[in-house]
Length: 315
Figure (cartoon, rainbow, N blue to C red):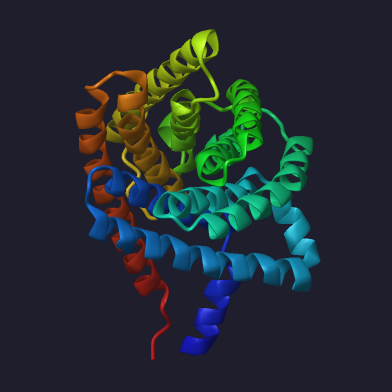
């Protein structure tokens, strides 16, 4: 019975589960930035392990259940495959695992256009927060490409990062037009991506601002856009947090990992942007927000364990 239950759980994994990889990966990056390296490595191990599980599931569906794969590939949540791969690759690149990070960049870049086109072809209006994953996945590529530009000595990666950054901004604007703002008070968790997409935009912009490729007016423009994106993401953070207080949604849902990821991304974006933009107070703010994200990760994981315990069949 337990084996069958485990098999059912495996088969029921949704593309939205990729946000769990993203959440652990970005929290690992944030913990590294504040010098908590032991905790950072622990979070990275969790992120990598989850990525391997979901990659195996992704491959199994691609090869063994094409009908379900095509149906899920049309949904915005499918883009967590790209975003999760990019987040993990960015963390490994900082750790010095450049060849592995390059491999993950190639994989993410191969997956991205097909999934993006499939999602855009089925876009509508009054969409949930997952719609913003078109921006998150694209900016994830910008972050990873920008991170790898210096250690690989490939300036074209920096230029590709800028192109992805600009495209991500356009995709965010399009997603915002299609977003159902009622999700702010009724969403199951992925509504937080509305702010998280701006946070990862700010993180990508931070990397570009810090790059020696861009000087003069280009550097100033990137700094301005980065700070604007970060400011708007913090405004979203405040609005969404207030909505959660007014309309609590304590029940576990896999989309709650899409709440944890923006919390960690906003914190990491603040920590990363402080030095390149010259706004020093962003670092203490980012440190506080990071511990909030860690707490949210622990609570979400505990809720997952409780939910799994309730679903377990009797002996």
